[in-house]
Amino acid sequence: MANEHVDVLIVGAGLSGIGAGYHLQTACPDRAYMILEGREAIGGTWDLFRYPGIRSDSDMYTLGYAFKPWREAKAIADGPSILKYVRDTATENGIDRHIRYGHRVKRAAWSSEDARWTVEAEVGGKLQSFTANFLFLCGGYYSYEGGFTPEYPGLDRFQGTLVHPQNWPEGLDYAGKQVVVIGSGATAVTLVPEMAKTAAQVTMLQRSPTYVVSRPAEDAMANWLRKWLPGQLAYDIVRARNVLGGMYFFKLAREKPAAVKANILKMVREQLGPDYDVDKHFTPTYNPWDQRLCLVPDADMFLQIKAGRAQVVTDHIETFTEAGIQLTSGQTLDADIVVSATGLVLQVWNGMEVSVDGRPVLPSQTFGYKGIMYEGVPNMASAFGYTNASWTLKCDLTCEFVCRVLNHMKKTGLRQATPVNSDGEITPTPWLDFSSGYVQRAMAKWPKQGDRAPWRLDQNYAKDLMNLRYAKLDDGTLRFTNRVGAVGKKVEKLAA
Image (cartoon, one colour):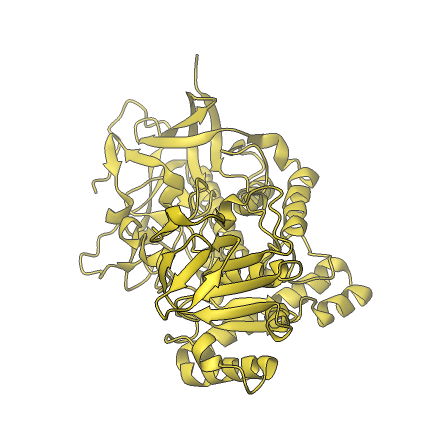
């Protein structure tokens, strides 16, 4: 039986994959595509995570698609609302009809002779093969199998319940319970105020502080504009304002970190009052944007701390006990439930094995081209969003770029697009310049970025807008080869 063939094979039916389907339908309407989704539902992150209070930590005017206005009142949206937005996008545009559920991609092999990928997916315990001219990885950057949980000393003694936000038990009852949330990132600052509404006490236990900023959950300007302007125009105006504002704040944080730090801490002190130990619990040792900032909408976490329903403890775990956690300072924390909000397990290329003309490709031995394609790997792209801004901003531009590449190949009659590194003096640097633990644990296995374009991964929307939407495609690095009709003739095979 012949393998099922499509022009473009997309991996993942989450925020990125549904966006990719829309862009292909719009810019490359003559190309057939399929989306392979390992799980049984659309939504990716927004379907997987079910912990209390789950929400975005980016505003929906930038996390939303450029082509589909966000029309809800809250700009900082809850998880179910975002999931509905993604699913509505898929249904309204017929993208859902292209999805194959329960297809977990395992490996992909490129053949230059055939100018196509052969992709194997596990379906019901068996392998099924597909072929495609182009492979677009939209499955995110972390493993769906489970999050990172440290080896806690004495955990076997603990008589309570330990959970990880990525595998939240359905129906977990925390009302009236003593809860300890271990961690200080976006998930922890989301969980603490939400659980504090009904728990007896919620303690956020952190080894070191994170920058926490408050902003209104609703965007007053956006809600006002929607009353007077067409929905798309109002959306575009707010989106542009938020993009520019975010870029300005990131630039300011890089150029004047001390001033930005002082301003963030000033706002925290205004929220918590002069007697609260902000230096100990909310003052990181690193500069703003060395790690991602944490967002608390409408100051919800600060309000719960002031009300006495939540507290922050900055210390290290000595050991778990039967009734909770003993800290190195000697303090003990009683706990009926411990939430290990300790991060994700990063996964490169959706955990897939990749080979090119029979040669295995190790991600760690490749450079990323414009943060989208990979050195020596033909006709493969991945969607990877910004760390200093909304994920979807970069993914929208990535999809546009992929469509440009596909249309260029069709126009020129060339079947293969391969980034080729001919500059032997490029200095490799980590794919992500982020000090967060979950990033540092994984970077050795990830592709590298270079110290100059086009191998540099710019965290800059304005630069990417020019480089991905308008810059020349045939730039001498991205090489287009393998002309249609070359079957049976010598085909160029690019060495590592």
